[in-house]
Image (cartoon, rainbow, N blue to C red; front, side, top):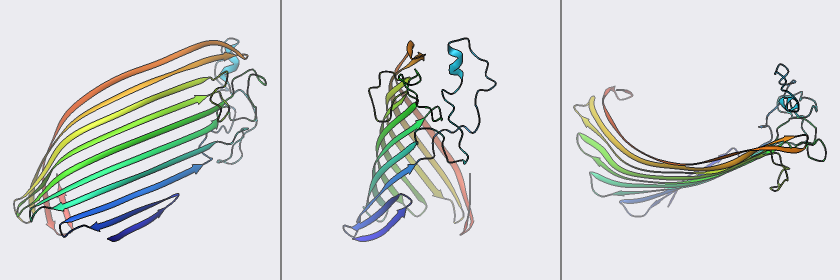
Length: 288
């Protein structure tokens, strides 16, 4: 076993460890964990907004401006709302790479990866110290909450060839990702059952991709080489979104705008590559 590296990141840590299983078989494990917490990512008003906005006829005219006037922040990273925003992002991932030298010319490589990301975000949309609510201002609370969670997995299998003039690889690739999102405004932080929620947007998305590709380089001489490549990709994407927007006027429910979208699409694409490489000296490369 060989300890390759341990890297400390800002808010996280990464590592990689290599194992020589046999003279021809190697295993490399790597991973990272990262956490970010920031309370300065919310919206800010430095001055009055919508001052030149044409006022809509009552009772909607009052809603063309912020619901409260609680002052404005003096410094760029400060806030003037009754609720301090927070943004937390947590992510971790791991990769396993297996390298098997079959003989002097062929090497088999497999690269597998898995990653997860979780994000939470809270902020006060009216940016003021006014505490909005049905019992106080007759409006829905102005707090926005957003939760996002995603996971992805991929695997790539390569067969590498190294000859006197010809070098290249043939590979198969698979990728899958899932995403869940929950975005709401008009609720108290952490409360999922407010009687009035101004906006509720939830959805799921998924992407799955298969690919086969090759890349070959043929050395014409010591300085000039030809390169050819091709890749075929089949990808499928799907979404399932739903939500509603409620119009609240003077504490009363006026109307509900309902949104729903479900869709699925598949794509197939073949791309080709052709070009030349010129190495006039050891530390220079020109390619097209």
